[in-house]
Length: 536
View 1 (tube, rainbow, N blue to C red):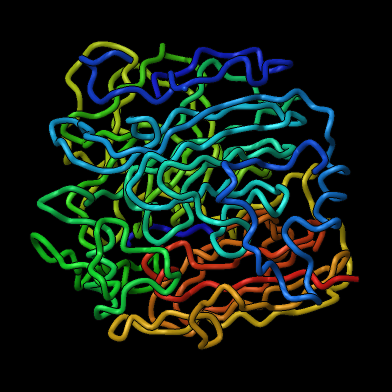
View 2 (cartoon, helix red, strand yellow):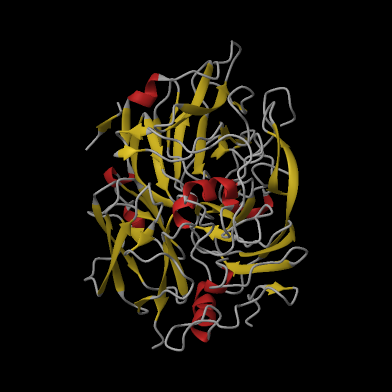
């Protein structure tokens, strides 16, 4: 059903066949405003001796993240690809968001961090140097990779300590739009994120330019605010359920004191999201690190065909996105191809991605991301000719036009899951409420020792039932699941309040894999768990 809503400089067309990682770097994600210059088997990650696998590992009846089953699965993915090497530093930074300077944490002093780009079949090798005052990890969101490279602290690796380094190394197999971010506490709500693009060596799409558009909500460093203080304010001073938060000098009892204004948001409502839209009042919303007052400018010529890769990198905000004066043709979601469908607007939950094609018209147009239910926007500008740029409060009519959700899309014929019976059903009840902020799965807040058993080779159904009054974007690590009725393959899906959805996936990647809500304040308050492969 079609729902009626009321409710980096562009890259010149790469002749996509055979390009790959030679076109990398951060050129797509440049500074704000038009006046500024426009990225065991030989595959095991390495560290400095302090940050490898947790010694307690998995219980004896579960596959260990670095066990022989994981090594064998990686060999099947392929170990002879070209090694593409990257080095990234996580560091404290002063960032200019376009007239607003904040102290935060970032990858290499840039927001977003430089693009990591490889071609499917390559071996991705990235060393993360931790120059932060707290420990960190790196999670490769959406990629099906070996389990000990997944970046989940106390499960798949030890946190990388301040001054330490860790080298992530794994085979890439699935082309698509992905991203990387930490998986400790609420660090994702700082500036620690970057796009990860896996090119298709047989790319079927043809286009003249490519844009990566990363949308984010922002409060870190504004009037003394930090994500940890916001978490503590929301969850009644309990701190972090994961045990790895309090990233900015929390007190000895694990709490951190709020400085500056309260960031608790009340009365945010959205029909699209089924009620309450969120709990955090972000002062800024950004596209590629820029505020609407000093927006990122994308340039093209009238008639150019443009591929846009949208990534919602926010901590707590769903966005309704539209390009003024244009319709968009959806080609992919979460990296996977779909039957092409035209729409005026998209709805992106936290961590979701959509690829679209647009044909540029003549003029100057707003690319607007409405913070759904929060009465604020992020904005960039498409300029194909002269003329006055749209103001920061511009709201294109397309935001209120036809809006397609992932549940209305169909998987492309080349990417459909094979038909087979379900072997195992895992019941996933999303529980908790905004008053107690006691978010959990099946009423049990997260601990790293949790396990829901599955077995290799099974078709597994996640029977997700949202028993709360708030929406949740549910993300599964290391796999993609199929939405119902021939829907697309995804790794994250929006589950509205008091609704249910069954999603199926093939258990073909052994290890311990996290399942969680990608609202970072929900997950770090307890709405996470682990699916564990049983030894066979």
